[in-house]
Length: 317
Image (cartoon, rainbow, N blue to C red; front, side):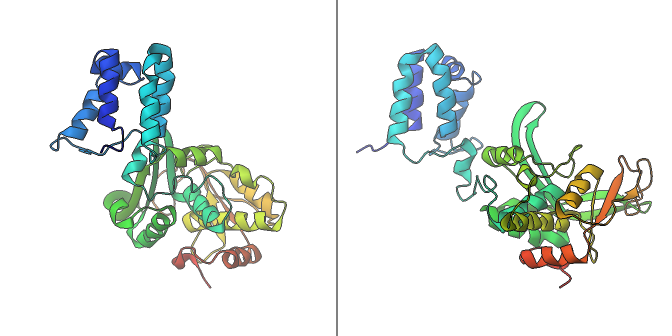
């Protein structure tokens, strides 16, 4: 006995009612080959991305519904049937390929762990919701191979399998006038809900032209908020802090000023190197100024004591 109304059945019913695969594809709001390509991926094992068990996501169905109400409202009954007989639909399409991913990990920063990884992303992460003016929703972290364990911890925290998602590559960079090859470890994946949550927090990654604190840390008015902020700062320090030092750095003086003000740090923000000057580490001409702020011994110790699961090589304790 058939339990579920399948994806293929839904496609066939839409096509029979609307007239053709290209026409049905356009009616639901996609390109003319969308449904024919999908049927191929579901029925032909030789096609790349073959998945006979593919199901539309709730996001897909919402898009279909909005478009069909304008163009062919009589076929909405098929969407309702599909939704009713498939109770295990994922929130968005790519989610079915990685069911363990905690897609809303950053939706509510209510633990020190979440705050820490948000801070680390601020320092070393790249988050793109758009690429060439098209939806992209990609998250990337690129580290030296010696810090691969940090990526393992990140993957475990958000529910990704490190063995599947952590890759390595080589990149050439100039170091004190000499071109060197660096061995890197990186993780990248696409997740619309996670990217949207990060953007809503006011995420500013390492390449952002304008940096500012996450919105949730604009006012630190109780003990727990301070603990969350210190965990976030430790994540940022593990990415952009100087080893064996209390200093953090950024290309945004205003960003460091926000941190300084939030924690009432007495140290001055100092220029590390100016635009058009050579960077000490890489021997290249700087495209933007770079600034440093010393957290001070007291804040540094409080930060380290507050959250113990940070990058081991950055802990002096």
